[in-house]
Image (cartoon, rainbow, N blue to C red; front, side):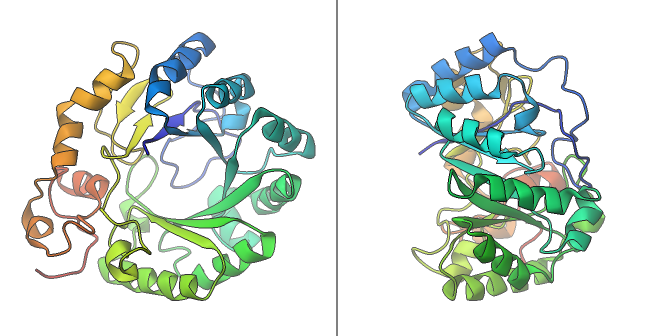
Length: 320
């Protein structure tokens, strides 16, 4: 299934230290209009994608429920990625009525001290209140981005996700894009250790676990447990910016077209960069590695490091 992640707005009530979108208090004046948004959904409907509405903070877009309802009516599975702080019981009721199937809440730590140092004072408690508003109405998952500032919190994040009743826990390994800084990145050796820790915890917990931007997890977890096949960017995942620009993923700032000029399906099927990502003629150690079919390395991280999205993943510690 194709996953379409759409950054519906730049507006956000927080200012997170590593924000991919470099979000701001106000929307971008060049964001897709309601008419353009609904037309875009019509254009992707034949592909029957999963649609993720993200931002910024998507709940700050005034027409977000009109957009979500249109996607649901077209037969898409629609989810929403939020920081949780604006989720009141009334908003949760509207999310449920709209037909949004899942909400992801981003938590950067299992305590207010750890989370708030990245997202702002009071944001942790507000996010937990948002989760409370969702409970029993809409499924929710917790997203956690791992950096050198919270790398020792994996077990605590598992505890928090279970305690709050999350249906899934998704770990994201930071890529230095947007406000993400090289200084916050985890070393390759530490990433390997964390992936092994995540897998140990996963084996002991009754919760769905996914790992993003570290396809090495498929090698560690083994067949049927990790996301086999490697980086999804350009293969079964695509990112649409608030202005309608198309990218292989949100951490991969390689523009391959714009829906304001071409139909999305035409871009998806014919953009040479996306075709190259699917053909996957990898270079360097990723090309030589026996796990290239299982893992293949993070293409966004290779691009961020070298400018070559088919090059080796600098976050992998394997020597081949």
